[in-house]
Length: 424
Ligand code: EPZ
View 1 (tube, rainbow, N blue to C red):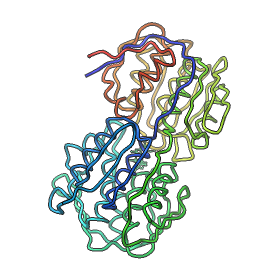
View 2: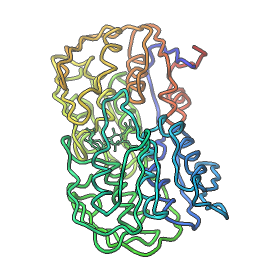
View 3: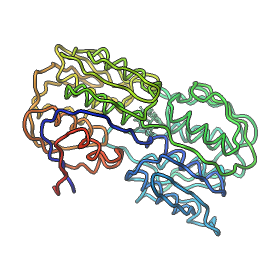
View 4: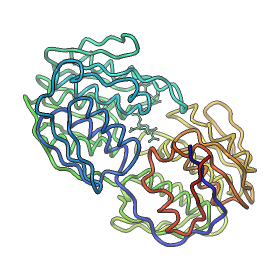
């Protein structure tokens, strides 16, 4: 296992954002809807992408991944026996996003057996909406020995309400849109997720020949077609990675040019950065962040898109630990996504949690310590805290960050960060 050794750093210069992990993963799953070749560009080099490649290989795809381009072909003889429809637990347990193979596998191969993902460190994370949607399309779905087994001779379009206790679901929307693309007739998905990653999946499906409308709104209409073809596509920039660098700029008081982004995907994040006191100058595909002087305390609530993303809650918490006054964060997507609180407190922060709320009393400084990364975004938050903290910090278990941040040390080093990877 690796750790990062980080010293307080002033950052300077520009950083280029990679392709979006959360856009790439469902699009990779969507290649299961066709036997033809798909070419996907701007795919980030990450552990989660490698895991999805392994899953697709198990499911009968041949994959080349070079220079951020994925070429996905179907093996000449994809047997529809076991290997043709089973996504095994040993792979799924390392990445919940593999559950979005369920919809496309079922639609194309009439049968799917995907390991039932367990809970994870950011919360319970149920999959009831995925299963409800597929059942409404006419699939028989059962949970057997830790696997979700679904079958349907033919899926039929339906009017499906996909809202849950915490609002819309990104990957349930992805699963149902993909299944409906090959269903008979019209499917209406109400309370669909509006995230840019879903918009992007729909654009890819349309290139494959699917008839889908309404992406980016809560009502998606899918007119099923008989078959889908291959497609070429470019993955959108990673808005969470971009937002992570916005937070790093604010927390370390370092002006920074963040390039290769779509600022329109980051409105709520830019709004939060400005409320904290940073200046954000928006270009077509870049954001220049000038952190300004003293940071202001704010109230921040995570919400489905276009609200402030839960995937940036931990990183912005670090900024608020260094702001003047008392801030309140309300986590409305994953009420238990606060494993980082205790670790940031070990660095001298004053954060109190009460259910889905945290109250942060801003401090002048944070101090280096040994801290433990618990999940992907929490790791990013600890790295930001370490760059802002006095002295030396060791962030243990950084394999989490390797799941979702492409060349993170390289990018930070280019900005002048004092960061080193060592064996733990
Ligand atoms: C996606 O997960 C992202 N993952 C997550 O990013 C992100 O945090 C999340 O969306 C929210 O934006 C990928 O895209 C691969 P949800 P997803 O279903 O789709 C509840 C990261 O760090 N819910 O939109 O699994 C759920 O518990 C990761 O990159 C149900 O109740 O999240 C949550 O409260 C972590 N029933 C809310 O909906 C369901 O069947 C939204 O979750 C499904 C979800």
